[in-house]
Image 1 (cartoon, rainbow, N blue to C red):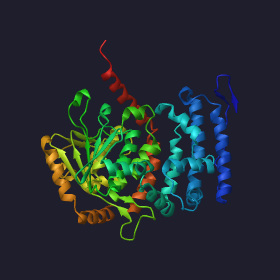
Image 2 (cartoon, rainbow, N blue to C red):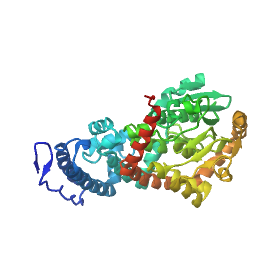
Image 3 (cartoon, one colour):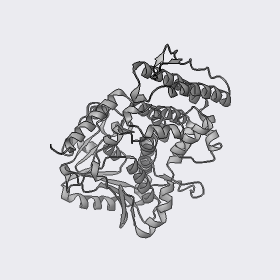
Image 4 (cartoon, rainbow, N blue to C red):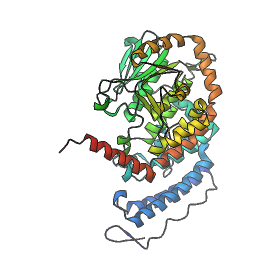
Length: 457
């Protein structure tokens, strides 16, 4: 390949065809590493993604496509061998981020390494290489496997290190300030108050971490028998003095490249949403034949709106109570990304036709609409929400509720069904993050928001 002085390609040949993988895991890993190394040499001679011309962008895309074809083939052939190598034959429980970087060290070229991801993290979304797509290929391969995938999903159902470090404090004080989430024990209930007022309680990386920690603490605490989630009072001019449940994903952070595929999009589905729905899995040393996991009922109190990820949350709660001026929406088609496990769960509650109108066409459901009965259990005046939540807590504080909600979860969404869904979600969502339509929509949304916040001249 010949490069012009400004870094452009001159008569550059396309990347070599992917190698045929037909050997052992180590032999095929060596072939993959060789191809990936060759591809990285080509990419290193190109300008940064934002500065590439059409020819250079096409060359970079060809490099990634060729390497990704090999990565996909490698994971189809060797997912269990890869996972066993990383977890010492499934004797170690390794969480998502540690797992994917361990894979980068053990199998060079399979997924981006720490340095490559640090470079990506410093760029806005439109200026990235899109290396998270390679992480999506990796997790799709692992989760497709009934053996490795089940081990990973079980791992993510266990208590997080941060929660374990805070468990004694919450048990003693009945209160933990996690920044974006305040957790307080009030009688039998653990109340999670979401406090991201600058963005109307939109979800970002820090909120995902705080939410998993808070959910874990509720499930670990013997004095807490019911979990309650509600949004805090806002300072945003449009909703000042009012509570808001959730505005969904933080589109400004997505535009700026601060939404992590692994630590946000994969983690939220495999950790706290799953723990609310399925309970917290105990390690073998603490589990018994009678109590393999810790389950508790959950109540959601919806003020103002539950948009996107906020509406997704409601699909795993046992009781949803909404203010009569609230609304629900899952604007996946408008944002261009996949609404988590909403595609798996919404149709169970609403039926397929309504689920399609909500997800594919952006239908908004008002709390006062007849269809809202398929999303929430009770609609009350805003000033009656506190009393309605307390009544729900008292009703759900019952050992029989715990047993029956576990059986409902088993009937509604078997673990293998969720695992298979998440395998395809991993790859599809990673690709969607870098879709031209998504980038364009996020950029336009950010520009409108910036214009609204700009002081008049």
